[in-house]
Amino acid sequence: MSWASAGWWLCYAFAAIALQALMPGLDFLLPGFILALQERNFPQLLAVGAVFVLLQEGMGSMAFGGTLLWYALAAIIFHVGCGLLQGTGFLFVTLFGILLSCVHYFIFATLATLQDIPWNSSLLFDECLFQALFTPWVWWVASALRRKVIHEDRNRQR
Image (tube, rainbow, N blue to C red; front, side, top):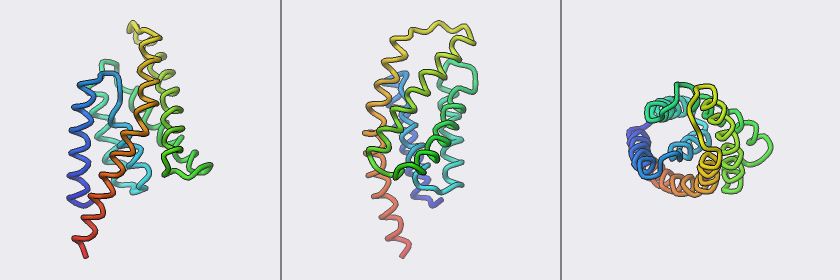
């Protein structure tokens, strides 16, 4: 991973954390994880995934494991979905975001119940609905910015 790429991921993580502070319950790191999955650079995916999972788990109020499970399922669903559809388009990311929001509802409802954390089903449903709606748009903006940074980095290397 180049310095420009590492710097971009660091800036993305800071922006996502700031947005999550403004809108608790929503995962702004997930669109970046999707972007890392799409780039198919395994060392970068491991680094980005590990950092994002640790950040999410550290910022959350549940016991460790919910975000790890969610991101692991995201990676599995992504690879299965790429076998069925082209994994780089807006439609794919929209369908992927909807599916991940359903998975999010199930995982966090189950974990909250197991940990005796009171939860409101309509609030969790609203969070999942917002997650499904904004994931493709955040991904689209991040993807456009990422292409610009990678393009400029490749031009400098020539």
